[in-house]
Amino acid sequence: MLKGINPLLNADVLQALRAMGHGDDLIIADTNFPSDSVARQTVLGKLLRIDATAADVVKAVLSVLPLDTFVNDAAARMEIVGKPNEIPPVQKEVQKEIDAAEGKPWPMISIERYAFYERSKKAYCVIQTGERRFYGCFAFRKGVVPPDAE
Image (cartoon, rainbow, N blue to C red; front, side):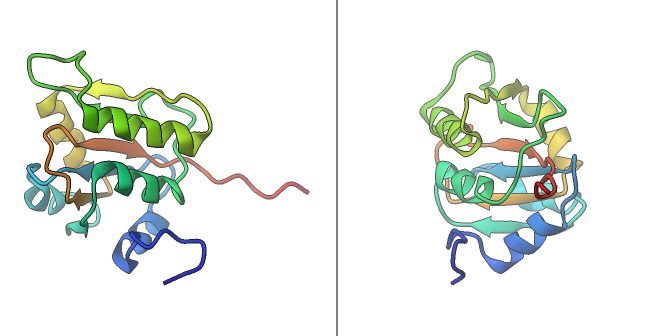
């Protein structure tokens, strides 16, 4: 355990989050996502796991990961096939965690399922969660941590 660090953030996840640079993508996926095969194609090349709900994992990750303020797609969700504007409960829960982490509304963009798979393959890494609800898949683009004020 580390003081001030969410206990869901294991050593492998912390190392990956620390290694990511500005503009790198992180995928947080549900249990049905083809996480292992996609993760093998990412920069990290291996699957990371946090066995918790999508919202709990997003809360933990965003406690240390800044979102990119230079783009409009720093937070994204996989859209429901045939219902791109429908927001299921799992995505509403994650949206609340994003807004809380950023201290303001930060709407997610939606990405069509197969386009989401393609973005995922180009990501830095994939974290598979214990989320069993459908469409618990999200992409986050890392921002920057500004220098301390002088």
